[in-house]
Length: 359
Image 1 (cartoon, rainbow, N blue to C red):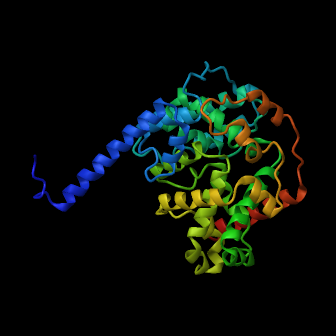
Image 2: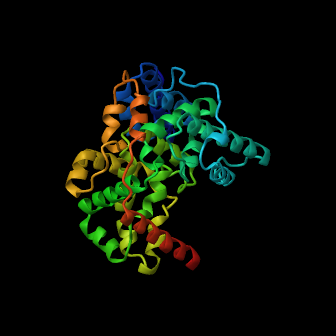
Image 3: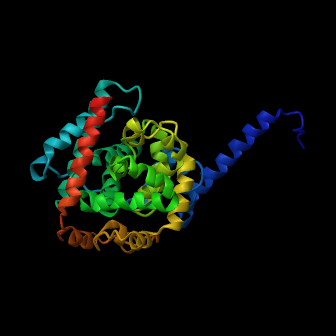
């Protein structure tokens, strides 16, 4: 038997850490091979999540039900979709913070892949409407999975997770934001009162939800860590994460100069402890299920909202086959556009522009 008593404490700790990671990776591999959704969902909520991109390439397709070959040959054309010009503009601005240290040629290549990826998804689902920010979500899947696997993965995210943002009406997204601040209010009434007193509207988290936080963080490892959580959770999880970030910044927000509060709350600190955010979000998930928070707040989303249909249409069982025809039926229904929602958004945009000009 080897005598380990002479090994320095720091070395012992390092060895223990390596052993724990190796065991975790082995556990992740087996869960993915067994399509053990319950275990994968549990591990996504633990520190480190799916550890690194090499394992995400194996696990994300399992959780998004695309690992059995949902991919088909690309046939999409920009001539058959709406907003091709806006898509091109957004793609041109993509890949700014990540990946790091890439050549202009490689960046242009990945941008071309991104554009054709978005066009393919929209061409295959003509009822979906592109929104600014969807390209950010697609970028993450492209960089982690590669184009071939990223297309069906991002397509399922569009259909079953962020569908509310891909409608003609902005109302579902607006209501989701108000549900988010309702959770903040239930958890910390004094903080919410302070924010409302200083005219902070829920739209400060708009890009957070629309991009799954990938537009507002520059550390790609933190973004993929959040994606671990999102692909293994209900479509409500980004709201819990947004609420958690707001709640964890309580002291910072309360002691900020009110003149700069709007700008401050909109920007997520890059040193945010993402594991602390996830743990708080998981607790909020247990405390405020989608139906309960709608009932408690009186803010009801339409029946076909992803928040109301996710469990039925996607759920947590590995054997469930997503019903795309049902989703297409949802998309064929008109969601009423409430003028006051648009007025609130216009007001927020004016304030946001004013803040940018001031800074």
